[in-house]
Length: 212
Image 1 (tube, rainbow, N blue to C red):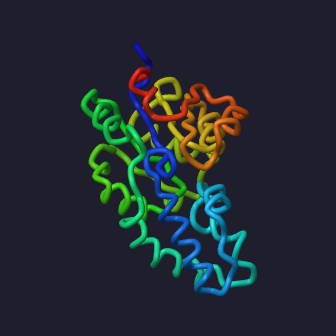
Image 2: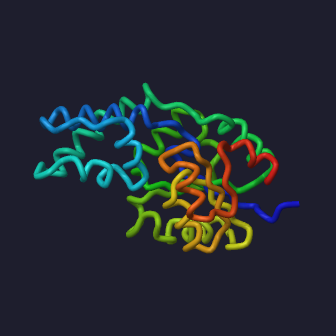
């Protein structure tokens, strides 16, 4: 029998394929300011640190406040049009909820858009707590996001599992001294994740049914 009772998930690339929406909004915004649009691969690699960090490398001397407002205005709609659940995500969350696991989200995505996305895809109901970078002084890979969730839900280092798709997620788990489950469905490749030595490394969420 496994030792976990708290499972914390990243959103983008882990539970949700929001890359089409992010790519659409990023290139719409860059075009609006007369800036060079970026390839899908380049934008996908920049996901995971929050929308400000996503756009910063591409905007040059443009006013970040203006750029981010334009991005968020477009993204509020693109999220609803172009995001979908990753394979096994809905079934897994329903399964864990029925088995009385405590479930949480730890994301560098802004809270407003996290709630929009989770509600739109009908999975918000499964989570006991949703915590995002804009509610903290530091986002991932700082461990405070996982520590705060554990404090809120009476979790411990030994009984908490963090599920994410990026090297930054594995690093966050290590810093918080919790078990990491890396899934190669997002911004980091399987080989990139392997170099971070997560506790578990898989190509989909399916394996979690056997672990939990």
